[in-house]
Image 1 (cartoon, one colour):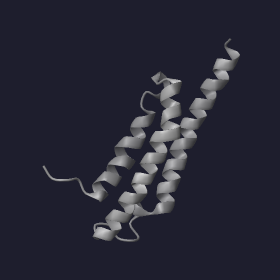
Image 2 (cartoon, helix red, strand yellow; image 1 turned 30 degrees about the horizontal axis):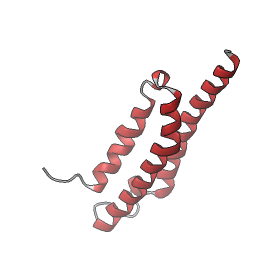
Image 3 (tube, one colour; image 1 turned 60 degrees about the horizontal axis):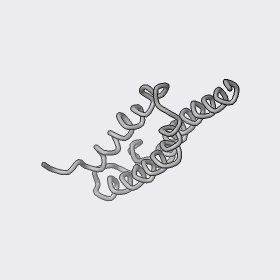
Image 4 (tube, one colour; image 1 turned 90 degrees about the horizontal axis):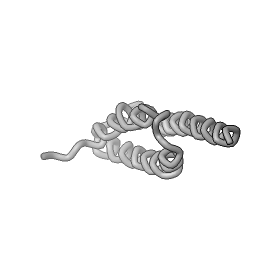
Length: 99
C-alpha cells in the first residue's frame, strides 16, 4: 500500500476532518470540546502548514494553489475554532445558570 500524497492529505483535512468535528457536536461532551480546541485543532493546523510546504516543495501543488495558501489555511482553522469556541462558551453559560 502506497503513501498518501501531501495534497491528498490536505484535501482530507479540509473536506473530511474539520467538518467531522461539527457532526454531532451537541452530543459531544465539554471535555471533548476543550481537548479539540486546545490540542487537536492546533496540532492539525501545524500539520496542514507542513503538508502545504511539502506539497509545494514536491511540485505537486503550485505556489498559487488555494489548497496551500497559508492565509486560507489560517482562516479555515480560525473559523473552526470560533464555531467550536462559541459552542463551548454556550455550554459554560448554560451550566452556570442551570444550577
